[in-house]
Image (tube, rainbow, N blue to C red; front, side):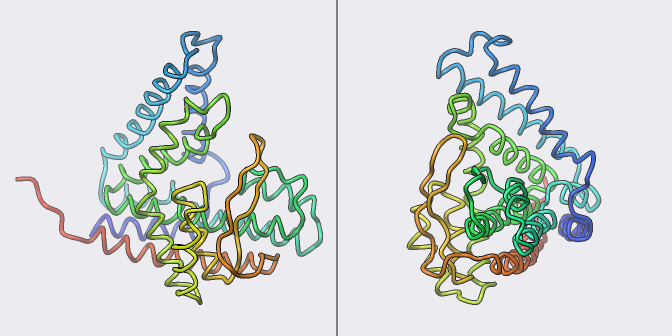
Length: 310
């Protein structure tokens, strides 16, 4: 039960305090990862990385060293306190809700410039041409996707593997956010990070989608949107979660997004109305219910009897 109790305490700490403003361990990991990435990708400091194979091989090593190192560090500890500390370090539910609420408040005041700036904390799309409803859609989609990435998935892997699972998962997810983009610099180098993050999120994303359907007001619509519309989304994991949120909230998400690297069509998820500013708090409330339900599932999973070594 010590692992289950650690998950509960870490989740409670995240809900009470959110991410620390300074000296966040995930930010520290990002600094290390960025320094290593610059050394590997820069042709001045690592000239042999000129071919596609060189870059992909280097990316595999990069992912293996950083994710493996984080998991190995977590694997040295188990029990209530290490699990609680690791859970608090990697969860992002309170901060996600705080950022979404800030976007909502700017829009409520009619401060479009501030809302455009604020939404960049949640999404990578170009905000310069986004209107209020576009910003609302971006925010709701981010709440859905990041509820899976920053709450459900860490709890799942914490239940399965304790601190090693928590730290290893957060390392992989952070690397995907940093280098897992199809840009000239990262298309080959970030391949391993993106694919490994996809693999780790296969089960948690579908758990998040199922919990969103169960916790929302329209379970049938959520399941139908998930089954019908999720394949249109370019992400194998964000698609089910965003579609389930769309069905639960009676919204239509997805569409065309403009990023620094180009334009992406995410299809249409759900058959409801387009999101408006008023739907951001609704998405936050659904995300909170999904988070608590994921904690319950993870506690049950962590409490299962584990085979003792003979």
